[in-house]
Length: 336
Ligand SMILES: C[S@@+](CC[C@H](N)C(=O)[O-])C[C@H]1O[C@@H](n2cnc3c(N)ncnc32)[C@H](O)[C@@H]1O
Image 1 (cartoon, helix red, strand yellow):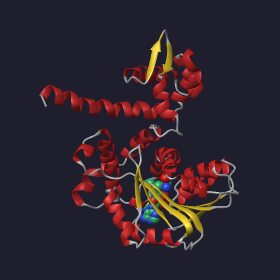
Image 2 (cartoon, protein in one colour; image 1 turned 180 degrees about the horizontal axis):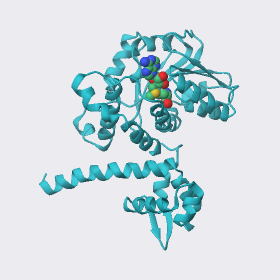
Image 3 (cartoon, helix red, strand yellow; image 1 turned 30 degrees about the vertical axis):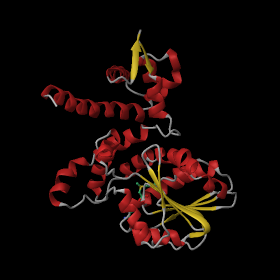
Image 4 (tube, protein in one colour; image 1 turned 90 degrees about the horizontal axis):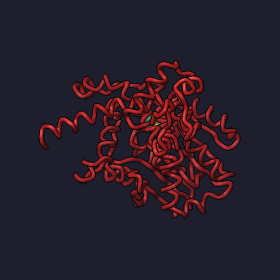
């Protein structure tokens, strides 16, 4: 690459860093929401400030910067959010949704001052703060969309098996967003979340109560290894969790024991690409970014081959690996 081109290339990364913070600020403060609600009429900076509680002069400065970063358009003193920007940043039920990824990248990076030390010593920074798990809950909103639009599309038999009364366990269920979405999509399911982190259990219970679904969804605190469900579930599900667990093989064994005849075990996750072309792609860069996040806390993304190895080591029947259009993959086992 010519030096000028390399300069532009690296400069692009710096611009991306600042752009991320304009996006994060706009999401956190509801600026994008307010602008989208205003439609093509747009808002003045004063109106934007009044609707979001932002200090008026700073609302104007945010809009100026967001315009520089091609997120909004300002003309005749009125600010409008670009339609496609609103879709990608705000529409949480679409697989293209990136709002949660921006929030995760910004909040997670607050801990990256520890990275040099972790790389030097090989010792992870121990616990992440609660704000991190709140960001994870936003990040995995995208996984919920991927599950409904891609996993269920690829596995219609699961949809047929999720009749009213079917029992579903979400292993390490975080803030409970998948459970809530399942209760809405398939009324009459008996849904249980198992969650290890006390603050995530508390958030899940609050989210479930707010959704009016406390009667349909229970949450048990602990590790799947310690909570002994046996031959009772029609679907046992892992969402973006298996790779973070200290004992994935043991957890898979416990999870498989919870599946009843005719039932399913599905693990949705994002795997490290192995082919050079896949690695040196936008998807590869994103996965490399997430891997950096895992380094901080001493967990790691793995390749699909390594994950399949966990299933074999746990003694499960040969799983099916389903690669999905979003770049995520589902590993699926059916107890026939
Ligand atoms: C990235 S979160 C995913 C949460 C949820 N499934 C979602 O999609 O939002 C990973 C999960 O791994 C679990 N986990 C992390 N470390 C763990 C540990 N040491 N023991 C048991 N579970 C752990 C957490 O409880 C957390 O729910």
